[in-house]
Each structure stands twice: as C-alpha cells, then as structure tokens.
Length: 186
Ligand code: GNR
Ligand code: NI
Image: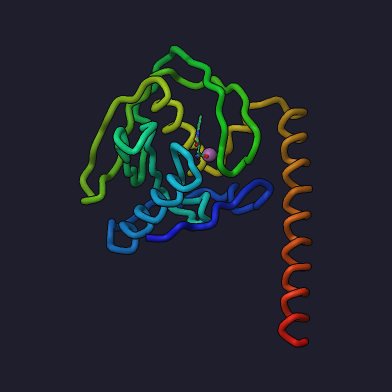
C-alpha cells in the first residue's frame, strides 16, 4: 500500500474526463487500495482517481467517522441511474481545493450502478451525506469540481488564491533543491 500525492487546483489534470475501466485486474485493485490509504491519511471521506492524477473511472468512499465504523466503498465505472427531484444542501469541501468550504445543492437521493472489486455489477441507494459524497466524486470523473456550482466571483477568488499557493510551493521546492545541491557540493 502507498500514500499517493493529491493534486490540487489549478492543476489542469483535474479537468480531464476519466476513462472507463475495461478490466478489474491486479493493477486496478492496487490503485483502489492505495487510494483508500491516501483518503484515510488525508483525511477525507471520498477520493476519485483523478485526484491522484489517474484519469480512470474509480472512486473510493468511506463516511465512517472512526476506525470502528469504517466501511469502505469501492466504485468502478460508477453511474447515477436515478436521482430524486428533491434537493438537499451540504457544506462541501474537496481535497483538491484545500481550505475552502461552501454550500452545494444536489439531489437528496440517488441510485448508483457500478462494478465491485470482483468486476460484478452492483447497485445501491444513497441518501444524506453518502448521496452528496458519491455525487461529488462522480463529478470529478467528468472533470468537474464542487466550486463549479458557485458564483463566478467566488470560484475565481478561490482559484486565484490556490494559484498563488501553488507558485509559492514551486519556489520553495526550487530553493530547497538548490540548497541541497550546494550542500552536497560543499
Ligand atoms: O473529504 C471530503 N469531504 C467532503 C465533505 C462534503 C462533501 C464532499 C466531500 S468529498 C471530500 C474529499 C474529496 O475531495 N473527494 O473528492
Ligand atoms: Ni473532491
């Protein structure tokens, strides 16, 4: 198992449409396990493969709060096959949009069809937080982000701040590499 780096806005890879999984093989199972470990470490309650720079239609979710209530869901090629007309609002966050939370309205209940780890077709109904998280993850597979639901002003403000953070991190990494090569040479 491995903890993978999570990419953040404005990384353009987050806007890619993820590709369906053709066959659930050992490589996919390893990716699912690594994604779960990465999500627990973050910590988060959902993770789409594109957030670890893998443009494949794979999602892990676990809304359990403690180690005892952990119940991971592994969703391969997930689709919403029914959504309620009734909407509900949740204050959402995203590991790829650090330090920002805002209300998003989505269908209150959904029915999901997906492949499981054995490659078998499964369906389940979700409501409440689970319905919200699963829809948030499926949006990632289309290159979407929860900030797409906000006003343009709000979205641009968040993207601007995270662009500055990314530039700052890049300069810090550059300086660190320079210092380390000087120390190695001295
Ligand atoms: O950890 C997460 N919490 C969360 C809270 C409310 C609505 C959605 C989420 S998903 C998020 C992890 C993440 O970024 N998944 O893509
Ligand atoms: Ni997210």
